Length: 480
Image (tube, rainbow, N blue to C red; front, side, top):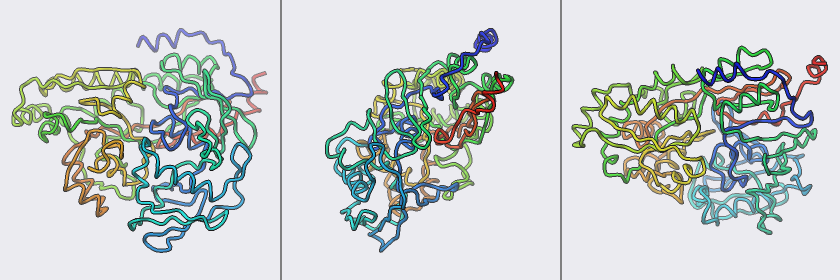
């Protein structure tokens, strides 16, 4: 309420942002613009714009051609043919098959990339000509093309050890200009500048939008502010259902959390529907698995864990733990994430769980997660398209640095199902064993000034429309 009062009393004078600069405000700036290393959502979303990938995905998350088409020569060999014509790299050099080979060769050799293990099955890459190359695999993999979604880097700059993390050079629709107080990008086709400005505080972010200092923002706002923005004549709001999976991660090396009944108790101690109703934006859905219901591999029969504090307490007693069970939950300092945490803290009390919240700045928090320095944490998987996420997140062979199994979960039965690519049974096993506690797929929205057009909220929250967004000249003329 206090936050709304601040917005209502805010100055109504509009300070229009630079006509040559569309300002996109984000809660968290990207951390790494090298696609071989990036794992945070902001970096992944920006890298989709700076670089081109061999493969993309359709609305049902099936792989489709992007930079190249492919042919399965046999179960262990794939031939890729680059499209013609194709965009130059941003340093004006031509992109060819050697650049693709250099990018993926580097991924097979890097020791500190979280994506390296995914390409360990590559035996060799042979360039046939400037437009064609062949991937030879050690073992057959019918889903190999699904993995080729890493942005292509220039071979000559890779050889010179270019710092792509802070000075990226790709061939995508937006090119890097500078990165000081804000990340400045420029659209290749028309020269339109797009600046990505980090504004951590949601109230300040909205005030900047209302004052015209910011043109566009997406997500990361409490629902009451979203409803308030809908009443503002200078602002328009666009929404969609969400596909990004929010969850509680668990340290499976913790002696208490190793007990299945404790994990089940935590799952039954959270009232997801109440949280969604009270503090989430429209179109948020309760989740049962990482991949959303519309995904082609999804098992729609998996029921969500209902809120049942009495059952949760009984499970804890059966597990032999002393009540109240004290757990430490790590999250970022983002106001909405802290809000989720405090609500869950209150919901867990009648279940016999004493949840201690530790909110950390994003860099510290995410580093703790990557290092396995947590008991419980809250995060969201963003933009996940392929079912091999289950292998990356829960496979025994995917414990860091070989993947994203940060909780160090190990289950022989699940490993066998993943090996067979029996995704339906693997999803059921994960749902029953709870290496993650599933929460929800958060609804998506984008808020923008009325003169901003060609930008829409996407289910996975991507920022791809930064490649098409424009400021309407007509509306600018009408203002005067």
